[in-house]
Image (cartoon, rainbow, N blue to C red; front, top):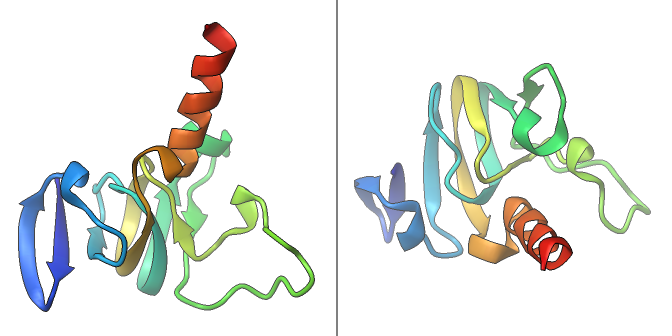
Length: 119
């Protein structure tokens, strides 16, 4: 579950399956990120994304725009303003807009690829 602001109303304990694109998710230490989200503001926000990228150290996240001019799509480790579904908030807090849910998240894409490999 997660805390979401939708239409100006705060919803505590909303199931991740009920999220829609554009929902504003409130993130805090110990939270599991419920969907791929674009961070809009952050205070000392760090994320353990080892389950997705294999990185050992928590990654600092920011609400700033990426400075990747000329790069079509930065790889996951370069996306310092995105919190990925299934990763864990290690410290800090922030607010983030839902940009991908279900199979369209980075974890969802991996799951689809694994399903095609095993079948």
